[in-house]
Image 1: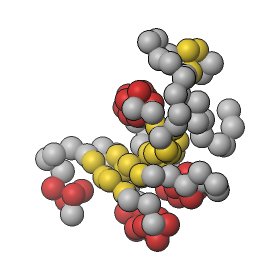
Image 2: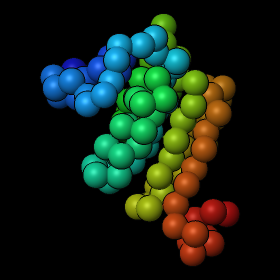
Image 3: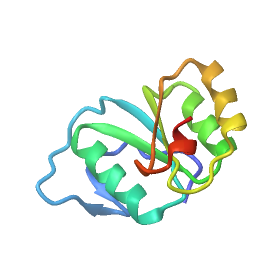
Length: 112
């Protein structure tokens, strides 16, 4: 596995996606999530919409995915169903990529 996110929307782990046709990638979405299964659901949905997806399990990797050299992310998603280092995430805001955070609706402190 490489450190570079896949921009191929036609395969997952070398297998073609069912009912998928090759299409132009709409942009990169960087995702911070430690939940492997939920991350795969996010990846599948975004790929169906034509986006390349780079999932990171820690903030430093997430920050690199946001900048990603010549393919800067169009959006960053932060899953706070698990503990997140918010101070480190705040530092990624300087990259200039919009960040959307989501988590359990009952986690009032997390939303603050």
